[in-house]
Length: 99
Length: 222
Image (cartoon, rainbow over all chains, first blue to last red; front, side, top):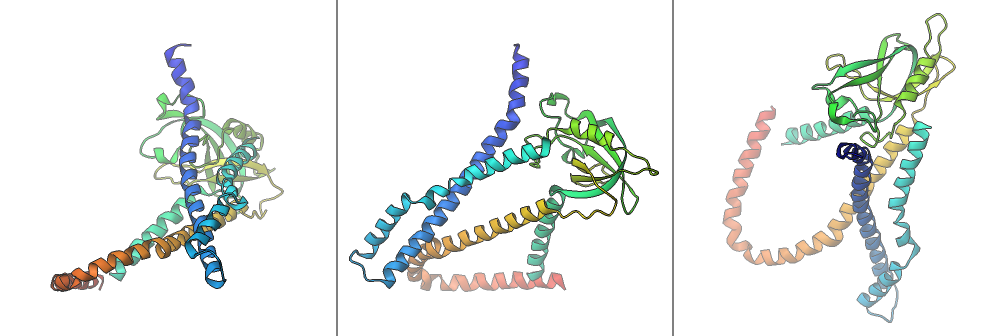
């Protein structure tokens, strides 16, 4: 394969690669936003829970323990769907549009 | 000041609406009267043509063969010409790579006024004679008659998702402001309060100058 032919092969892949890269950057931003939001909602709920109840721990320790539990929760793992769903949608669109 | 604000917001809304109107799929009921492929030397209207077909050499990108579908619109009976190009991996994200198959299908569905075959043609984009731009036909399907009603489900779903995304972003911003920004500003504000007395005189001067500027802007609107 000559140098120019290699160039063409690379260019053909390039469009796909650019989509993947831009998509990854954008989705990472979305992932970061969603997880920050979700964590903040959880924190506020924990603070409220402490404010209304009678707890042995002090407020900061109670919230920290709750956030530790949140780290291994299903809800936090489900945020990974931010990457999975768009990839599946793109695959579905390619199939529906063309075949 | 209100005029400037509303003009600005109006322009932004107009741009967003135009962008969505160009990009979202629409469906026309047409009768296809012909298909052809034609050399196009793309110039200032290049924004409104897609890139070269996926996998082909982009070196001669500004002069290429473009497939066209000529039709007569049901209802108005006016002519409408569509281009038929791959969008590939680019924008807008239709991921269309089968323009040659669409062209074959369009040629197959060609009919005469005497024995019409009606076709629902899904497309995005605009036809404009002054810029020689054409909507891109994305897919075709035969339909029973010229009065078939097509519900634009895809556009409905996309608009709902966009609205949901906007609401989510608004809520993220509000939460950030209430729980992060304002507590931080409050502690900064305490520090500023001690300097306030000295800055008072300077601030009063700035305020009147700003007030004069606003009065001048309001005067422009009348």
